[in-house]
Length: 158
Length: 158
Image (cartoon, rainbow over all chains, first blue to last red; front, side, top):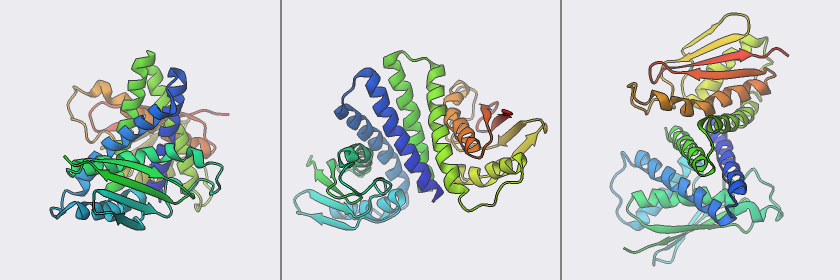
Protein backbone atom coordinates (compact mmCIF):
# COMPACT_ATOMS: atom_id res chain seq x y z
CA UNK A 1 0.00 0.00 0.00
CA UNK A 2 2.87 2.30 0.80
CA UNK A 3 4.60 1.82 -2.49
CA UNK A 4 1.35 2.17 -4.30
CA UNK A 5 0.75 5.53 -2.69
CA UNK A 6 4.30 6.60 -3.44
CA UNK A 7 3.86 5.90 -7.15
CA UNK A 8 0.52 7.66 -7.27
CA UNK A 9 1.73 10.77 -5.49
CA UNK A 10 4.88 10.91 -7.57
CA UNK A 11 2.89 10.43 -10.75
CA UNK A 12 0.61 13.30 -9.77
CA UNK A 13 3.55 15.57 -9.05
CA UNK A 14 5.05 14.67 -12.39
CA UNK A 15 1.89 15.63 -14.26
CA UNK A 16 1.56 18.82 -12.31
CA UNK A 17 5.18 19.74 -12.95
CA UNK A 18 5.02 19.04 -16.66
CA UNK A 19 1.90 21.16 -17.03
CA UNK A 20 3.26 23.92 -14.82
CA UNK A 21 6.53 24.19 -16.69
CA UNK A 22 4.52 24.28 -19.90
CA UNK A 23 2.67 27.39 -18.80
CA UNK A 24 5.91 29.27 -18.58
CA UNK A 25 7.14 28.09 -21.91
CA UNK A 26 3.70 28.24 -23.53
CA UNK A 27 3.82 24.60 -24.38
CA UNK A 28 0.48 23.28 -25.48
CA UNK A 29 -1.43 20.33 -24.03
CA UNK A 30 -0.33 17.97 -26.77
CA UNK A 31 3.32 18.48 -26.03
CA UNK A 32 2.78 17.85 -22.32
CA UNK A 33 1.10 14.59 -23.18
CA UNK A 34 4.03 13.66 -25.41
CA UNK A 35 6.52 14.44 -22.66
CA UNK A 36 4.65 12.30 -20.16
CA UNK A 37 4.34 9.54 -22.71
CA UNK A 38 8.08 9.65 -23.37
CA UNK A 39 8.89 9.44 -19.71
CA UNK A 40 6.59 6.45 -19.41
CA UNK A 41 8.34 4.89 -22.38
CA UNK A 42 11.74 5.02 -20.72
CA UNK A 43 10.40 3.78 -17.40
CA UNK A 44 8.61 0.94 -19.21
CA UNK A 45 11.82 -0.03 -20.98
CA UNK A 46 13.64 -0.18 -17.68
CA UNK A 47 10.92 -2.08 -15.87
CA UNK A 48 10.47 -4.79 -18.46
CA UNK A 49 14.16 -5.57 -18.30
CA UNK A 50 13.87 -6.23 -14.61
CA UNK A 51 10.61 -8.15 -14.86
CA UNK A 52 11.65 -10.50 -17.63
CA UNK A 53 15.07 -11.25 -16.24
CA UNK A 54 14.02 -14.76 -15.22
CA UNK A 55 11.07 -15.50 -17.49
CA UNK A 56 11.09 -17.96 -20.33
CA UNK A 57 11.26 -16.73 -23.91
CA UNK A 58 7.88 -15.66 -25.27
CA UNK A 59 6.21 -17.87 -27.86
CA UNK A 60 4.56 -15.14 -29.88
CA UNK A 61 2.98 -11.71 -29.80
CA UNK A 62 -0.08 -12.90 -27.92
CA UNK A 63 2.15 -14.45 -25.31
CA UNK A 64 3.91 -11.12 -24.85
CA UNK A 65 0.56 -9.40 -24.55
CA UNK A 66 -0.61 -11.82 -21.88
CA UNK A 67 2.54 -11.11 -19.91
CA UNK A 68 1.79 -7.39 -20.10
CA UNK A 69 -1.80 -7.96 -18.95
CA UNK A 70 -0.90 -10.19 -16.06
CA UNK A 71 2.60 -9.83 -14.64
CA UNK A 72 3.48 -6.35 -15.81
CA UNK A 73 0.08 -4.88 -14.93
CA UNK A 74 0.03 -6.52 -11.51
CA UNK A 75 3.49 -5.22 -10.66
CA UNK A 76 2.73 -1.68 -11.66
CA UNK A 77 -1.00 -1.28 -11.15
CA UNK A 78 -1.69 -3.94 -8.48
CA UNK A 79 -4.30 -5.78 -10.48
CA UNK A 80 -4.59 -7.67 -13.74
CA UNK A 81 -6.17 -6.36 -16.89
CA UNK A 82 -9.82 -7.39 -16.79
CA UNK A 83 -10.28 -8.09 -20.45
CA UNK A 84 -7.94 -8.61 -23.39
CA UNK A 85 -9.30 -8.59 -26.90
CA UNK A 86 -7.63 -8.76 -30.26
CA UNK A 87 -8.67 -8.75 -33.90
CA UNK A 88 -5.70 -11.07 -34.64
CA UNK A 89 -4.38 -8.48 -37.05
CA UNK A 90 -2.21 -6.50 -34.74
CA UNK A 91 -4.74 -4.64 -32.65
CA UNK A 92 -5.15 -5.42 -28.97
CA UNK A 93 -7.56 -3.81 -26.56
CA UNK A 94 -6.77 -4.04 -22.85
CA UNK A 95 -9.59 -3.13 -20.57
CA UNK A 96 -9.05 -2.22 -16.94
CA UNK A 97 -12.34 -1.76 -15.09
CA UNK A 98 -10.72 0.09 -12.22
CA UNK A 99 -7.57 1.74 -13.42
CA UNK A 100 -5.40 2.59 -10.50
CA UNK A 101 -4.35 6.05 -11.62
CA UNK A 102 -7.95 7.10 -12.18
CA UNK A 103 -9.35 5.43 -9.07
CA UNK A 104 -8.78 8.47 -6.87
CA UNK A 105 -10.73 10.75 -9.16
CA UNK A 106 -14.44 11.45 -9.03
CA UNK A 107 -16.47 9.06 -11.12
CA UNK A 108 -18.64 11.70 -12.77
CA UNK A 109 -18.25 13.13 -16.22
CA UNK A 110 -16.92 16.45 -15.01
CA UNK A 111 -13.26 15.42 -14.93
CA UNK A 112 -13.39 13.28 -18.02
CA UNK A 113 -11.52 15.90 -20.01
CA UNK A 114 -8.58 15.62 -17.63
CA UNK A 115 -8.27 11.86 -18.07
CA UNK A 116 -5.74 11.97 -20.96
CA UNK A 117 -3.02 13.50 -18.83
CA UNK A 118 -3.44 10.76 -16.26
CA UNK A 119 -3.12 8.10 -18.94
CA UNK A 120 -0.24 9.40 -21.05
CA UNK A 121 2.48 8.08 -18.77
CA UNK A 122 0.88 4.64 -18.67
CA UNK A 123 0.51 4.51 -22.45
CA UNK A 124 4.22 5.18 -22.66
CA UNK A 125 4.88 2.56 -20.03
CA UNK A 126 3.19 -0.11 -22.14
CA UNK A 127 4.82 1.08 -25.35
CA UNK A 128 8.25 1.08 -23.69
CA UNK A 129 7.74 -2.36 -22.21
CA UNK A 130 6.62 -3.81 -25.53
CA UNK A 131 9.42 -2.06 -27.35
CA UNK A 132 12.05 -3.77 -25.21
CA UNK A 133 10.37 -7.08 -25.96
CA UNK A 134 10.81 -6.39 -29.65
CA UNK A 135 7.25 -5.33 -30.34
CA UNK A 136 6.96 -1.88 -31.87
CA UNK A 137 3.58 -0.34 -31.22
CA UNK A 138 1.38 2.70 -30.85
CA UNK A 139 -0.55 2.82 -27.58
CA UNK A 140 -3.54 5.02 -26.93
CA UNK A 141 -6.03 5.10 -24.11
CA UNK A 142 -9.66 6.02 -23.86
CA UNK A 143 -12.06 6.49 -20.99
CA UNK A 144 -15.80 6.47 -21.25
CA UNK A 145 -16.71 5.96 -17.58
CA UNK A 146 -14.18 6.53 -14.83
CA UNK A 147 -12.32 4.70 -13.45
CA UNK A 148 -12.64 2.17 -16.27
CA UNK A 149 -10.17 2.56 -19.07
CA UNK A 150 -9.28 0.94 -22.39
CA UNK A 151 -5.78 0.79 -23.77
CA UNK A 152 -5.51 0.16 -27.48
CA UNK A 153 -2.27 -1.27 -28.79
CA UNK A 154 -1.61 -1.13 -32.51
CA UNK A 155 1.34 -3.27 -33.49
CA UNK A 156 3.64 -1.69 -36.04
CA UNK A 157 4.85 -4.36 -38.39
CA UNK A 158 8.50 -3.96 -39.18
CA UNK B 1 11.34 -5.38 -6.24
CA UNK B 2 9.05 -4.21 -8.99
CA UNK B 3 7.71 -1.27 -7.07
CA UNK B 4 11.17 -0.39 -5.98
CA UNK B 5 12.31 -0.23 -9.56
CA UNK B 6 9.27 1.79 -10.55
CA UNK B 7 10.02 4.44 -7.95
CA UNK B 8 13.67 4.59 -8.90
CA UNK B 9 13.02 4.92 -12.61
CA UNK B 10 10.32 7.50 -12.06
CA UNK B 11 12.55 9.44 -9.70
CA UNK B 12 15.31 9.46 -12.31
CA UNK B 13 12.92 10.68 -14.99
CA UNK B 14 11.74 13.42 -12.69
CA UNK B 15 15.26 14.67 -12.07
CA UNK B 16 16.08 14.51 -15.73
CA UNK B 17 12.92 16.38 -16.65
CA UNK B 18 13.41 19.11 -14.08
CA UNK B 19 16.98 19.69 -15.24
CA UNK B 20 16.04 19.52 -18.90
CA UNK B 21 13.22 22.01 -18.59
CA UNK B 22 15.60 24.27 -16.69
CA UNK B 23 17.98 24.40 -19.62
CA UNK B 24 15.31 25.95 -21.77
CA UNK B 25 14.28 28.49 -19.19
CA UNK B 26 17.84 29.09 -17.99
CA UNK B 27 16.95 28.00 -14.50
CA UNK B 28 20.02 27.46 -12.37
CA UNK B 29 20.92 24.36 -10.38
CA UNK B 30 19.66 25.78 -7.10
CA UNK B 31 16.17 26.27 -8.43
CA UNK B 32 16.04 22.73 -9.79
CA UNK B 33 16.99 21.45 -6.37
CA UNK B 34 14.25 23.58 -4.82
CA UNK B 35 11.67 22.24 -7.25
CA UNK B 36 12.61 18.66 -6.52
CA UNK B 37 12.58 19.37 -2.83
CA UNK B 38 9.09 20.88 -3.08
CA UNK B 39 7.77 17.90 -4.96
CA UNK B 40 9.21 15.65 -2.30
CA UNK B 41 7.56 17.79 0.34
CA UNK B 42 4.09 17.30 -1.11
CA UNK B 43 4.63 13.58 -1.65
CA UNK B 44 5.90 13.27 1.93
CA UNK B 45 2.83 15.05 3.24
CA UNK B 46 0.58 12.65 1.38
CA UNK B 47 2.48 9.55 2.37
CA UNK B 48 2.62 10.29 6.07
CA UNK B 49 -1.14 10.66 6.15
CA UNK B 50 -1.52 7.17 4.77
CA UNK B 51 1.19 5.67 6.96
CA UNK B 52 0.00 7.08 10.27
CA UNK B 53 -3.67 6.37 9.70
CA UNK B 54 -3.64 3.55 12.24
CA UNK B 55 -0.69 4.37 14.47
CA UNK B 56 -0.92 5.57 18.03
CA UNK B 57 -0.30 9.21 18.87
CA UNK B 58 3.38 10.05 19.13
CA UNK B 59 4.82 10.72 22.58
CA UNK B 60 7.34 13.34 21.62
CA UNK B 61 9.68 14.58 18.90
CA UNK B 62 12.08 11.67 19.34
CA UNK B 63 9.19 9.26 18.94
CA UNK B 64 8.26 10.94 15.66
CA UNK B 65 11.85 10.72 14.54
CA UNK B 66 12.01 7.01 15.29
CA UNK B 67 8.90 6.48 13.24
CA UNK B 68 10.55 8.27 10.31
CA UNK B 69 13.70 6.17 10.68
CA UNK B 70 11.89 2.87 10.90
CA UNK B 71 8.43 2.71 9.37
CA UNK B 72 8.60 5.60 6.94
CA UNK B 73 12.08 4.77 5.72
CA UNK B 74 11.29 1.09 5.30
CA UNK B 75 8.17 1.84 3.28
CA UNK B 76 9.89 4.23 0.94
CA UNK B 77 13.49 3.09 0.84
CA UNK B 78 13.14 -0.60 1.76
CA UNK B 79 15.48 -0.46 4.73
CA UNK B 80 15.76 1.28 8.06
CA UNK B 81 18.00 4.17 8.85
CA UNK B 82 21.26 2.69 10.17
CA UNK B 83 22.02 5.29 12.75
CA UNK B 84 20.05 8.07 14.41
CA UNK B 85 21.84 10.68 16.44
CA UNK B 86 20.66 13.83 18.14
CA UNK B 87 22.14 16.64 20.21
CA UNK B 88 18.83 16.81 22.12
CA UNK B 89 18.54 20.42 21.05
CA UNK B 90 16.60 20.00 17.86
CA UNK B 91 19.20 18.54 15.54
CA UNK B 92 18.90 14.99 14.31
CA UNK B 93 21.28 13.17 12.03
CA UNK B 94 19.95 10.14 10.15
CA UNK B 95 22.59 7.99 8.57
CA UNK B 96 21.78 5.53 5.81
CA UNK B 97 24.80 3.43 4.90
CA UNK B 98 23.32 2.31 1.61
CA UNK B 99 20.85 4.87 0.43
CA UNK B 100 18.57 3.37 -2.14
CA UNK B 101 18.56 6.26 -4.60
CA UNK B 102 22.34 6.35 -4.68
CA UNK B 103 22.87 2.60 -4.71
CA UNK B 104 22.77 2.39 -8.50
CA UNK B 105 25.51 4.95 -8.94
CA UNK B 106 29.19 4.29 -9.10
CA UNK B 107 30.86 4.39 -5.73
CA UNK B 108 33.81 6.53 -6.75
CA UNK B 109 34.29 10.21 -6.21
CA UNK B 110 33.62 11.14 -9.80
CA UNK B 111 29.84 11.46 -9.46
CA UNK B 112 29.86 12.99 -6.01
CA UNK B 113 28.99 16.39 -7.42
CA UNK B 114 25.76 14.95 -8.84
CA UNK B 115 24.62 13.56 -5.50
CA UNK B 116 22.60 16.64 -4.41
CA UNK B 117 20.07 16.27 -7.19
CA UNK B 118 19.46 12.66 -6.20
CA UNK B 119 18.88 13.68 -2.60
CA UNK B 120 16.72 16.79 -2.96
CA UNK B 121 13.47 14.90 -3.44
CA UNK B 122 14.16 12.74 -0.39
CA UNK B 123 14.99 15.75 1.77
CA UNK B 124 11.63 17.17 0.81
CA UNK B 125 10.00 13.84 1.52
CA UNK B 126 11.25 13.89 5.10
CA UNK B 127 10.42 17.55 5.59
CA UNK B 128 6.89 17.00 4.24
CA UNK B 129 6.34 13.97 6.40
CA UNK B 130 7.51 15.76 9.54
CA UNK B 131 5.50 18.83 8.64
CA UNK B 132 2.28 16.84 8.58
CA UNK B 133 3.17 15.44 11.97
CA UNK B 134 3.42 18.97 13.29
CA UNK B 135 7.20 19.20 13.24
CA UNK B 136 8.53 22.09 11.21
CA UNK B 137 12.07 21.49 10.04
CA UNK B 138 14.87 22.12 7.60
CA UNK B 139 16.30 18.97 6.04
CA UNK B 140 19.63 18.77 4.27
CA UNK B 141 21.65 15.84 3.04
CA UNK B 142 25.33 15.20 2.63
CA UNK B 143 27.34 12.45 1.06
CA UNK B 144 30.97 11.74 1.73
CA UNK B 145 31.22 8.21 0.34
CA UNK B 146 28.57 6.80 -1.95
CA UNK B 147 26.12 5.21 -1.39
CA UNK B 148 26.20 6.25 2.27
CA UNK B 149 24.31 9.38 3.08
CA UNK B 150 23.53 11.58 6.07
CA UNK B 151 20.32 13.53 6.45
CA UNK B 152 20.41 16.37 8.90
CA UNK B 153 17.14 17.57 10.35
CA UNK B 154 17.04 20.92 12.11
CA UNK B 155 13.81 21.40 14.01
CA UNK B 156 12.34 24.88 13.72
CA UNK B 157 10.85 25.83 17.05
CA UNK B 158 7.53 27.55 16.62
